[in-house]
Image 1 (spheres, rainbow, N blue to C red):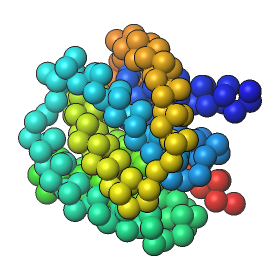
Image 2 (tube, one colour):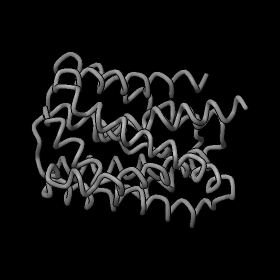
Image 3 (cartoon, rainbow, N blue to C red):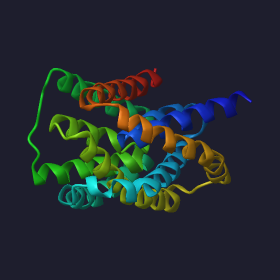
Image 4 (cartoon, one colour):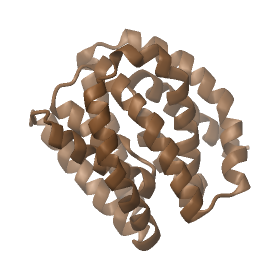
Length: 238
């Protein structure tokens, strides 16, 4: 019963964040799902449910998608995806998550200190590559995108629309790569099926939250999520 309650809370809260911000699911769900499942199962459940959310929202938010940035992110991710699965299969997960957590925390602190970067096509492709690698290795494509878009002062509408559109591609391809090279299990699909009703509730609540939060609130929420994700990944390794 405790397992079901914790799983339900994780999926519901992560779905609300994903719907309202465009990036919250993997950042919140993956670290906590790793408490309940083995890395492969946690990552694949995250990929499946995130794909469902992106598919459900894409028609509603398509007007907010920056198509040029989206194309460059996809191109970059084609390089990062195979790199990520190689890391997942070859590198000790403790060291991998430790390095990623430190990177997230350092970059988040720079953003809080008002560090900003200029949005450029080559940087779009680079961030797409990092996001692809993060997805197939630890199931978290959000941090590179979130750090980048926050550093370029992207509006919350464009951030949500472009990241959700990108997730449609990155999650589907990552799931296929994970299943082919790492295998899958019945637990992944039954747990994902159990999470679908909670995702539906999260979709409705997340839409209401998105209309309520302004750009300043959105930025603060961004920093909080990044600090929580980086901090949790760091603490989890000790």
